[in-house]
Image (cartoon, rainbow, N blue to C red; front, side, top):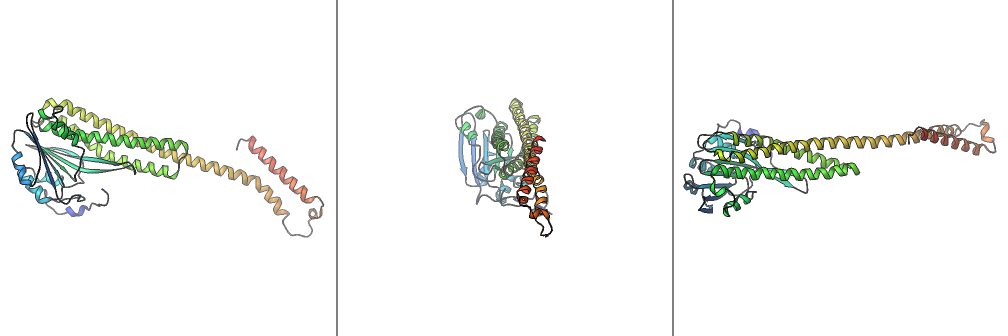
Amino acid sequence: MSGFKYDPSVKVGLKPGALLHVGERKLDKIRIRVTDFDQEHLEERELQSIEECEKYRDKDTVSWINIDGLHNIESMTKLRKIFRISSLVFEDVVNTHQRPKFEEYDNYIFIISKMINYDAETHTISFEHISFIFGKNYVLSFQEKFGDFFEPVRERIRNSLGRLRRKKADYLNYALIDVIVDNYFVVADKLNIGLNGLEDELMMDPTQDTLKQMYIIKRELLKLSRNIRPMREVTSNFYKMETDLIDTRNNIYLRDLYDHTVDLNESVDMDRELVSGMIDTYISITGNKLNEIMKILTIMASIFIPLTFIAGVYGMNFENMPELHEKWGYHITLFIMLLIGAFMVIYFRRKKWF
């Protein structure tokens, strides 16, 4: 995240489970949205306080509570107590530097992932820390700021599209993570398109800006890979986990989600190898151009060395130099110099040096 430097010393000495927001504060106040549904019922509203979440804890319907803003530790503490969540879990919720992971507890499952954003102008990516806690009939999602990629899921719930209204909290959580993984593919494709454009430029007329853009994409691919690799572990645990909180009939979808992350890992790794090869190619092309320039300069220097020698000899100011008094001495000297120059040019051409 731009403009924020993480200082690990801020957590030194704190007891396990102590809540401390680590990261950039992106909102003035938190926003709480709830989507409560089953096959016949749908309720969407924005809550004014954390205490209102309590009535959605034990409902028979599926309750999705989304919280934008992680900085309000008092509200997070209240929510933790309402849903009886471990303080260690919420310690990771408010720490935006935690890597993606999957943890199982007695009555709920905790998942950390990263939402990715792409800047087309600079070819750079940024990440948003997103956490999920889901139990039998509820899903808690935590985001750093307003705005997300989950609107298609909300639309599916509103319009009763697909299986969402017939399924439980585990399927809803799968749908949310599936949106995150799909967005990884979108960003990876955009980076790949930018890389292909640079590859064409590399073969035509590479410049210093070409090298700069390649290094930028290489850095962004590395950042992407660092977050995709643990997401593969998350999705693997999701479909392999044996728990009453996950319906075994959903394993086919969870396994497909895992396959997507595997494909994504392979695609990003291939792009990283490609950009590394492109950088090596650029260095090789630049080296060859430099060698060509040096060869031309060397040939020119070789031609002019004997001519410079002759000019230097007859440029000395001695009085008793017989050739200085010859009527045709100047013309003869120039003729000899031209012969020498022509001979060396012919010699170099026969050697195919140019």
